[in-house]
Length: 169
View (cartoon, rainbow, N blue to C red):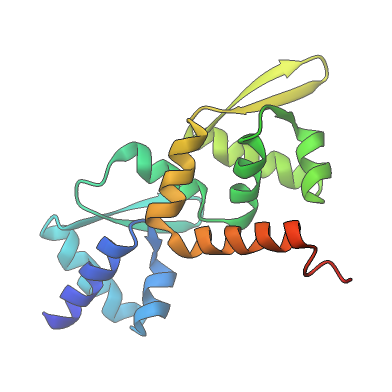
């Protein structure tokens, strides 16, 4: 029971944590974690949501809109795309150029963000232009409240960018 409470506490502290992250952070074997999560789900204390190849775990009653945002910011590339879109609409090629990644990679991640309802797409000639369907302030709040480690990392990156540290000089 003590182990189960430890698992529940971690899920409450980090809603949207993936199954693998939870196992790694708590040092729990896969079978043991599956057992306890099954019990917690039966007790209606947690629920999981599968998206792509990952299983995200939330405390019961966690707001649906916030679930989608947490899933969206769970991968670095999607998070970087969202941060770019906070400045305004961009085409797929602009996103690829600014992030230094291929257009097929951008296309894949934009498809995932579209499925989650985080971005909107509109055709503009031969290009597709993407915009956020969420207020940027809400996205920033979710990162700050539910993934404070990401917030600190983003702040460090901004400081490095502004001071020229870490650019090889």
